[in-house]
Image 1 (cartoon, rainbow, N blue to C red):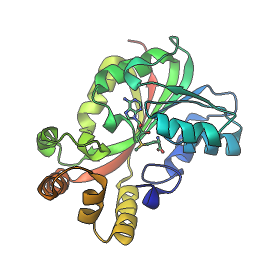
Image 2 (image 1 turned 90 degrees about the vertical axis):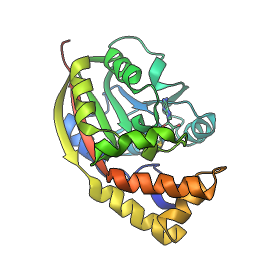
Image 3 (image 1 turned 180 degrees about the vertical axis):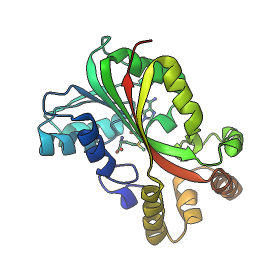
Length: 232
Ligand SMILES: C[S@@+](CC[C@H](N)C(=O)[O-])C[C@H]1O[C@@H](n2cnc3c(N)ncnc32)[C@H](O)[C@@H]1O
């Protein structure tokens, strides 16, 4: 994946991060949590460009070790979105850049984000979604760890966020960024099929094939959603 995405592990590199910085007027003083920070690419970007010292959380010790080595100015914590080890109302912004789709306990995580955000705090989500959400049920039959397995039903996600108490401020389709990434993957691996066979270690070829088939049926897209913590 990294061969195609570079420093970040998501489509679009820092384009959407930059958009979020402008939309939410984030600055050096903003207390930001990077949920699912991976190798700390966003931590580096925000520090180098804006002097922001983010807090990053991720369950992968391998990725956190890389993040810590590259970003001595940031704080990295091992943990999961479903149990954030922070006080209520602690952050002014939570970034979830291509991470929620990997979380099995999405609802619990969204409630946790609500809890740790201060009133009017920003929640920025960039992630994959299914333009054909009625085909998503078939994805539950796979136990593959991939954001594609957790593609969102964008309409349901918005409903859940509002139910929790978020106000949706901005939703944008950014599917061109996913297409660009797919083109890069095809250039580096020969085909999406070859990429899935390499990525999904330990699965038989037939499983990879039907996983790829199901992804196509869902018509994957990419989105950016920015919400604010409102009153419950
Ligand atoms: C596609 S990567 C994106 C990483 C980073 N946000 C980026 O854009 O470069 C998804 C990240 O989510 C993390 N992740 C998976 N499950 C998680 C969970 N339950 N809570 C927090 N992070 C999680 C993974 O370890 C991984 O670093």
